Image (cartoon, rainbow, N blue to C red):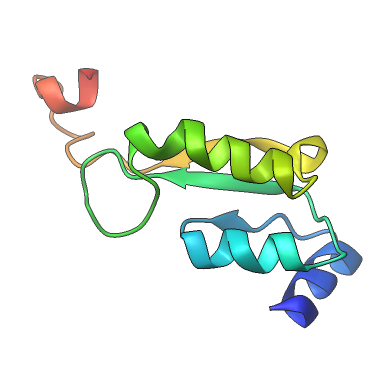
Length: 89
């Protein structure tokens, strides 16, 4: 994990973190690439659940990584269905 984060920082890559294990790697690393957080908005494949985000942000703060936090990304499970209440939520 440390070499991966170092490589991201050196190459200007902006990783998208989606698991608690990745947050642990970040906390244990001296490297701080710009990063994004993936939110699980209904597809249930990858990402933090919305109710976890307060704890995730606290973890980033304790790791000293808020300064390189860019924002959130997600996939909408029904984005092509204009009448989907899930996408609106």
